[in-house]
Length: 203
Image (cartoon, rainbow, N blue to C red; front, side):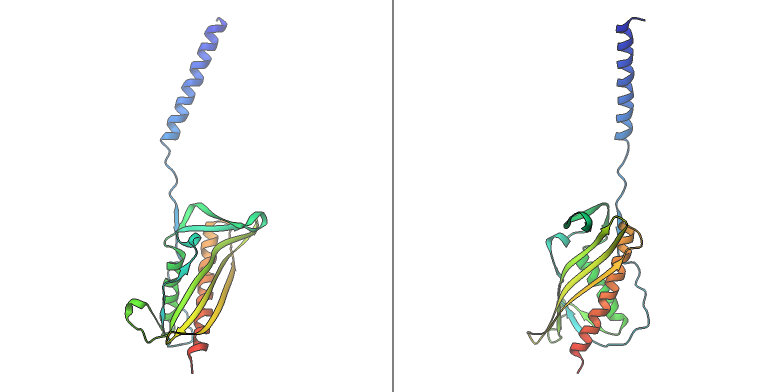
């Protein structure tokens, strides 16, 4: 076989292999994103508070105003928020947190209304969500961090302010572990918030 025929045959073979490879790639669909929420609410035996409070719309930063699941690599660059590529929250963090707060209030016999309910005379709780991310301190260790600023208003006057932070270790260093840890952090912070409101509003 001449050198020219050999080169021609080799080129045709490589070209055919590339077409097959590209055809396989074109037929491959992207893996669907996994969606996470806080799961079914597990009601536990807790003290009855009987509070009545209106929850204003939770304010948040632009970075948290989406369904993205965010994380920070503190060991590399803790100032950079990054989203998981194949995981997302079922709803924006502020909505997830508001839903959990209402469940926690109901479990303790309390009412957490909204401005749309027309209960102007009730104290109003204003929250600003500051952090809602999974933070990696090393590649093998991370925790969910949830922090917010709370303002309690009564008769149009600020009667109390507080800052709340919860950090919960992640069992696994991935989106699933971060979601589970964030749910635990949200439940703990909800209890902190309820206890704080009880101390401010009880005679």
